[in-house]
Length: 219
Image 1 (cartoon, rainbow, N blue to C red):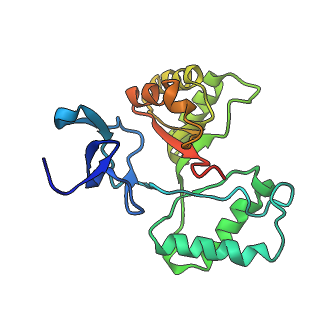
Image 2: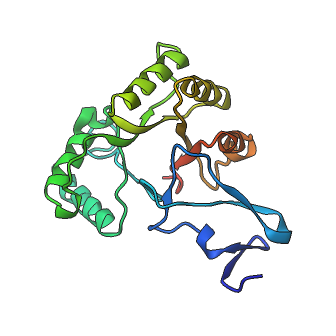
């Protein structure tokens, strides 16, 4: 048994299985799961690739309807952006509906004024369907996501708040195009473990789909 390990729930995990700000998630590839010796504990190998393990959510940026955004909020958000970049966290969760697009405009402004983040983004790393509430079928959206990848608009594609059945349908649709479903973003925290207890996370991992948890601190 290696000495450089951490005791969690009476089982030893190697230090490299504990995520840090520098850890990256490998998307669009099957997650490598390895047994941990005699304890038969399984852990997910993490890789340096694209997304940081910690993602900064930007729903509140520019949103006056739910989050009471004011002009005084802007420098605070800019400070959070700069600190995140300085700590190696360069993944930001945004959406066109956040602040009617103001969240995305905030990120664009902050990038322009931060030399460490001012590189030109020709395509996004991960583009997700925001939720399963849409007028078209999962398959129609899956075909559109595949087209976005083929056009070079995004490197990987995913979904958010999809049930196990919906996730599998999207996975199967993208597989017909030779494209991996990269992620399903769901609400997951210590007090909301339904994605885990329902078997949803296990079904995602069987297919190499990374599970991204939002509201992990129950904010």
